[in-house]
Length: 109
Image 1 (spheres, rainbow, N blue to C red):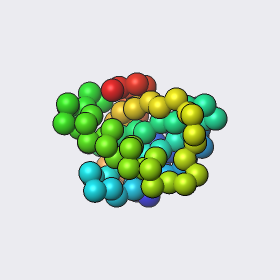
Image 2 (tube, rainbow, N blue to C red):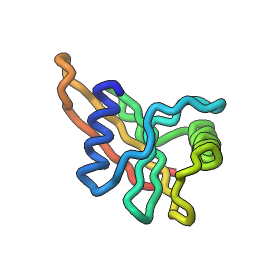
Image 3 (cartoon, one colour):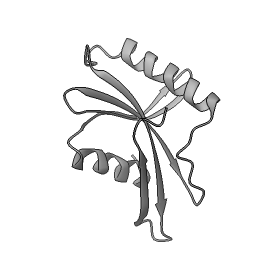
Image 4 (cartoon, helix red, strand yellow):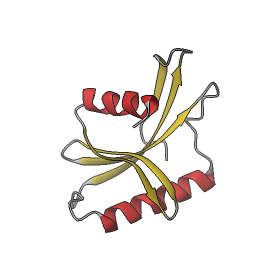
């Protein structure tokens, strides 16, 4: 897990979520983070860099839903009956790799 993913995972853990998976490659692309708090299963899209991209495009939203469906289907221990939520997280690091900002958009799509 790279630094940006680690910061995003720690953020979810502070919110009371358990990280179920991260950086899972599917046939529809990379699934950044899957977190669960006992009732809500969150699929988070992680972006990094200077430009804040917490608003995914229609194509990105479609691909994320497909990645989530693959994850649920392929993961025997996926929580049954959980509410699903799709979040966007944008992480900016400084030159030394320390967290500068983390923007979390719950229910981004």
